[in-house]
Image (tube, rainbow, N blue to C red):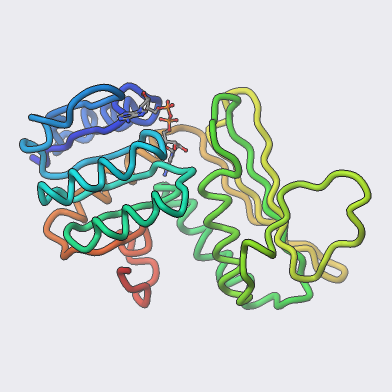
Length: 250
Ligand code: NAD
């Protein structure tokens, strides 16, 4: 039985992980920790930690996991550069799987987008559109950010200059190197992402729609089973799903 501590246990995703663990049968939730709770004694009892909480909770959690030798699986998004660095520092001592999206379908989308950029070339303009429920706190979504990072990396563009977050007013013609990123919010949408490649005379759109949080929870549990016993390093779902054997742990 894999023993898991859920960090952010009272949230939408924390509850989905607990429900999935109960259904899958080979995972025991030994502790649930939310804002204001202590990580002890649950952390010492756990084989791994699954985190869906808030960006500013990440540095302390990563340091505690590293100090106690516990693998960390985190899906928390909206991280600042300093908070991302906290993962990198802790990953010198423990395996960490951080994924902006734990669903198998979205990770297939990442793979497809990488290849579509290569096949279609620079004549195709790329725009990314995401939609989430009205309670989501960060924008763009972590998944849209990952999609933009994939496009920028394939095109060797600095994302901070290429990203175009929405348009308003007399913005002029679209620049060739722009990557448009647009966030819609409303209702109870679990998570939709479309990457639009608009070229001369044709358009390709790749869309993923999540219908339930179960898909993220199942992916996080799969990542936890995978991470236990792995060497220290910062991993993502490419490693867990063996989607890209060339992807090195950072
Ligand atoms: P939520 O607001 O429903 O839940 C977050 C929980 O974290 C809350 O219960 C909150 O009290 C708790 N929390 C806040 N600060 C904390 C702290 N310091 N210590 C412990 N707990 C703390 O949000 P959610 O929809 O469950 O999403 C949580 C995070 O996961 C967000 O960043 C979201 O974008 C991300 N997310 C990722 C994926 C993925 O597949 N990677 C999927 C869905 C959501």
